[in-house]
Length: 455
Ligand code: AMP
Ligand code: ZN
View (cartoon, rainbow, N blue to C red):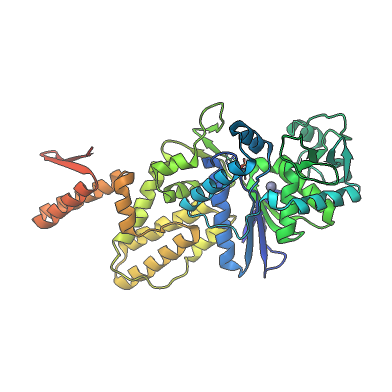
């Protein structure tokens, strides 16, 4: 297996530290609002990576945290006049619901920051004791000049880092790039007791502390969206390396951003697409396939065409399965070319092309033995990538409520015309009834058959 490593900027052979226990940590959501389609991208990408790793390694421990201490959460709670738990429980539950609809399997551990305050405080204390952090006016800051490799992950020099972080030039900082490990809370703000007074952790320390607590000092893979490389992952790396004197992460893996109509999603542009709203428009598998349609490291442009295209692709795959419903699949592995694509830095676009190729082969198969074999391969491959989790009957009846694809209607109309040419009027009537059940009205004329969706 090969993975692109942000630290080296190269695709590398993936060699876990301990093949008997492969470890992966992915930064999860800050739960103060509903997830948007961009947040769904790392969840789906790293779900596929976990599935591919599990195929090869007997034990994979996957951790994806929930950030439930954050100033945006505090603001949302204050605005509603409720405790932060009300906000974080509500949006963590919504996140779980949304991801389940996308067939994202739960990680092995899903730690919350509020459950790890002792680990966080102990790690900060250790950094202070080792001279990598200092206390100033109720804050504890990490001293970046104490870590000579600072900036190596994000490939930035000092000037860029100070500008990029838009760092607050506070008088108590020894260096403008020093970042907060702990900060004081005002009486009305959520806070926890610590050696430095009542306060709360900065953002970066939580992932360093939780990954060490659950996975150990060195982890194989650390993932997240590309926006996290700097400052979040750069800072995690500094903290963990300095606290443990050990390599923190063997492979840094980052997904590219999802844009909407070539623009960055933002509240000010009013183009933020909530995952829940998209799930009202299309089944979760359609959204999942769309998210996997491009290479994970490339930007993904979400347009009006994205969901209809993915739906048609699934119609094709389920169509191939429906035609062989009576045939029992033999037990097969996912085909080699499909697995090879996924193990080549998670090339899901190439893997999907293999999946469509399998469906085509299935449509053209010459005998039932071949159909049984290809059906088995198609099911194994789609399982590995988390698609085709319904039966064709469920899928096509679901189209009833969710909108029927043009391709599906044209196929049925063509089949009906053929039945009529063969003078098989019973079959032609049956297909007409099927179209009616799908909400399609047809009109025959000398020019052919026209159709429209009823209602
Ligand atoms: P947040 O809740 O903002 O910390 O984001 C959770 C995860 O979603 C992080 O891994 C982010 O890098 C990722 N993310 C946020 N926005 C996007 C986007 N537009 N495209 C891809 N990933 C994103
Ligand atoms: Zn993190």
